[in-house]
Length: 330
Ligand SMILES: O=C(O)CCC(=O)C1=CC=C[C@@H](O)[C@@H]1C(=O)O
Ligand SMILES: [Mg+2]
Image 1 (cartoon, rainbow, N blue to C red):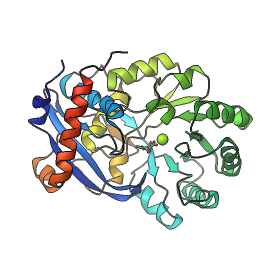
Image 2: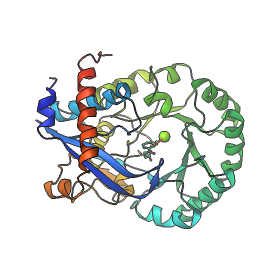
Image 3: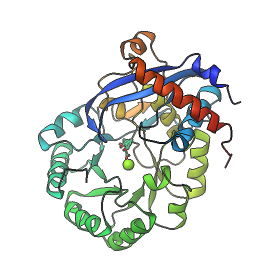
């Protein structure tokens, strides 16, 4: 069922949550939350995304609020710590926020950071986690093939589980994958899945060993499950830096995938300094329980965005809802 814009606007609330450290260039996370028959849901495309891209996120949010979630195969999901591109002295404190996580994903190649900065950060993550820890890196497509090859050579000594979106295009990803195959370091695709016209193109062209799957950008749990099934590749379910309400969507997606061999990037509530619930979906003992999260009225009020930002989100929701009426089924 496709609710009217009024159905959604009736319960819509916009929040702006402070972050514990700057992540992907933001230190406040804005989100629009609303309630449907299944409970609270979240629409939170990043603010720079255009309406066409943001519409998939709204379809996901509507699906989670109005439709039942698919059958689940587990009641908890193992998760990774997420380490923003912080300076070395902050690494230990960041990792401490992710209770019991045996895996860490470390951001690299951010503007203003050199390979030496990235190397120092990863060396520190390895020191703190010890030899048993699993370390994966995410370059968000910032490297050329040569830069990525050089970086992987430099960082391989820290024992990398995989390198996520090292380069921007599918062709570059495939080229790099060929060059580093002999090192046994897998290449994961993220933006090549969630921002691509065809999320399966990267899998079909053999440019990645595994896929990073995010529920909101892919249009919701069912659509994401169909991408997973059609890709034939192992996957990591990851967040879009949502509040705990939106993280619930990702956790349900992860709990419906079998097998799920990699730890998932769903512990990002620990990067928020505030949330919309008193019991956030955070890692405990390295895992997150599978449950829906209800937004708390007092916290929605406490963290309400200002009137101008609220209006911006409500207008965005109306425009995306209009576009969503024509959202074709894949
Ligand atoms: O995967 C994780 O550990 C957490 C989620 C995460 O890293 C991301 C969430 C949202 C936006 C992205 O820039 C970023 C990513 O690139 O994977
Ligand atoms: Mg990524």
